[in-house]
Length: 217
Image (cartoon, rainbow, N blue to C red; front, side):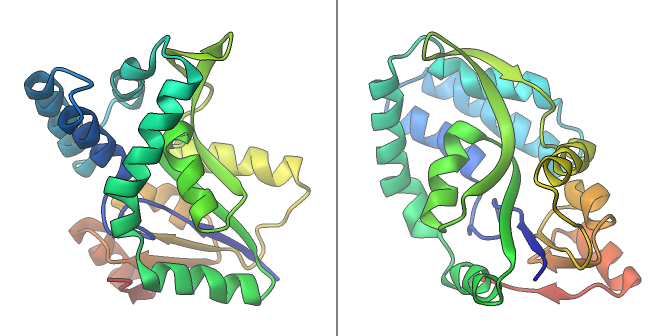
């Protein structure tokens, strides 16, 4: 039995839940669509280029949740799951998760997307362990501020190391599946890195390093 770690966006999902959340907010009329969409696209381009200011992005993404009643944000997320996420859950992604479950591996999703967006998605895959960017809450409502170490680039390594220590787990034989060059810091830490439908930079690195390259599309 080993630790099986999965990135989420563009790995188990056929799209990016963070970016799609922004699209959902615009389409639902919950934000100023034109201005919000432009900033959403700009941040996504920065992510793809490996130049994202993660804390600035988190403040942007969490802003619409600020001071909203819990029942309101929960209703938003249910509709978001129905309209944007359920159609892009990859059957081959589910099958990959289930193979590791059947092997008795410990399943963990680690993602740079915030936990508000991703925890229900992790539940849809039947995965309880989630490491994601956390958001500050006060009196049961989001403040719009990030909390703790963001799970982005080297932050994924730091948060995973904390999790391993807290759970008395082992990294021996660990798998990590990801599509993004932003995850190279963590891919290089595991015994079994796997590039999944990788971007060009990750594909080149994986091929040079002799890592498996697979597709779940």
